[in-house]
Image (cartoon, rainbow, N blue to C red; front, side):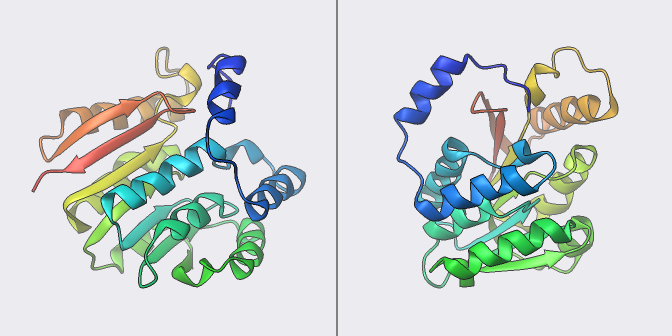
Length: 212
């Protein structure tokens, strides 16, 4: 992810966000050592933001599309009640192996179920109702993920989509991923089934609240 927010401002925000526990710090550091494109990993501020959304919504069943090495899944699982559960989708076995080790270390890891394979196939097996959906997978399918998940989302449920500012490339879209993100934002903005806000948190986060 290219930086497009002032570095000093971002550091100020980080310094005034609750610090990450050691488990998360070690996961982040291993991800940067071992994985290609480690910047795909959710960072401290976004992890805490997701965690706050889970607490505020009282979510009990979460679907995550795009686990990577598990930082965001762990952050959200930590905020779930004991009987809560999170289903997370991934296609990279190397990322899965790292995530499973850290899930095993966490007292909240048993709330997480990993589903390997294309996320759209996994969605077809779910019945819902989902309380919260976090979309952070391949950008070309963002609109497809949204349309597949919205019927499974409870009224008053929340869809959260990452990277919706796409390092500022939404202003001058060039490649297919750029255009896919622009199209996704336009889709949500025009969808009368939801109320939405596009936030300038990290690389951009879209919140879409399903109308009752």
